[in-house]
Each structure stands twice: as structure tokens, then as C-alpha cells.
Image (cartoon, rainbow, N blue to C red; front, side, top):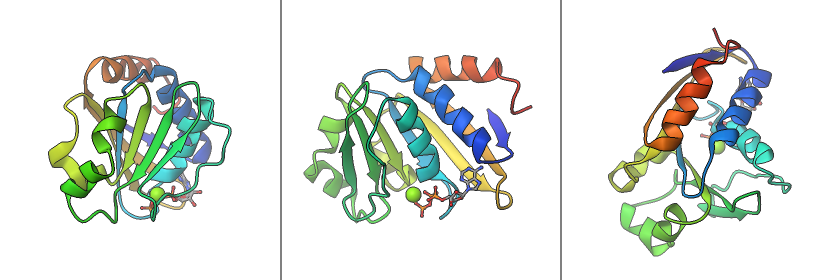
Length: 155
Ligand SMILES: Nc1ncnc2c1ncn2[C@@H]1O[C@H](COP(=O)(O)OP(=O)(O)OP(=O)(O)O)[C@@H](O)[C@H]1O
Ligand SMILES: [Mg+2]
């Protein structure tokens, strides 16, 4: 499905809807060019998921862990050299865990993404406007798709 957010408030609303759907082991993949809004959306999802700490862009650490209603793992794989490096960092233990994992630039590791995941692609239209496509597989994705189809804000 495709939605258009007009501004950052719409993105925050989307983050809240996503957060409400999350379960243990949910993996959210975020793609889109530099400055599309991947980290911004992650912050809103985290905030609504009970993460009190400020989310920072984890570019140099690849994986950051936060405490929320569920453990919240934020990855930015932009600088990863190979999918093998992900396993060296314990990738498996994060995605098959009791926590929620958000992966920026997930396309770069598409060979090792779990089948059940939510895929969000963000495209910058202008300073504030973003086109967002949301696809996926699995129960959490189905739940999210249902929630979004009931939401009139974006139409
Ligand atoms: N509707 C919107 N949704 C998300 N971000 C927006 C929106 N409107 C404006 N912005 C701004 O766009 C910028 C997005 O930056 P952000 O760091 O989230 O991008 P990113 O996709 O994570 O980039 P990178 O690839 O460098 O990690 C922020 O400065 C944010 O305030
Ligand atoms: Mg980012």
C-alpha cells in the first residue's frame, strides 16, 4: 500500500500506528535515499513504544539497543560490507528475539532478512512531503495494513 505524508506530524502519526502493531520479534525494514526520513520515523516508532532514551543515528555502531515496552533494536546497515559481518555482530540473536528490530537501509542485506517483515520505503517529494510504500508478510504486517486502511488521515 502507498500513503503520502504531508509533513512530520503525519509521519509521527504513522509511527504511532506502527508502534501499536508491534510484537515480539517484529522486524521493520526502512529504505529510501539519504534524508528520506528513516531515522525520523524510527524515533517516532520508538517513542510510542516506550523508549525514553533519545534515538541517535547509529551509523558507526550499526546496532543500538534501547529499552522500551519491548527491547528495541535500531540498526543502520549503510556501512556494512557484507551480510557475513551482520552475523558476526549477532544479527540472528536480534531478529529472532523478544524485541523489535528496525533496520535502516535493509535492502543492503536483503539476502538475510527474515521472510516475515514489514518493508517501508520512503521517498522525498519536497521538504516536508514523503511518499511511503508499506509492504510485508506475516501477522504484524496484516494487522498494520488493516489499521492503515481504517485511517483517513493520509487519503
Ligand atoms: N514528513 C517528514 N517525515 C520525515 N522526515 C521529515 C519530514 N518532513 C521533513 N523531514 C525532515 O527530513 C529529515 C530526514 O532525516 P532522517 O535522518 O530521518 O533521514 P534518513 O532517511 O534517516 O537519512 P540517512 O539515510 O542519512 O540515515 C529530517 O531533518 C526531518 O526533520
Ligand atoms: Mg538515518
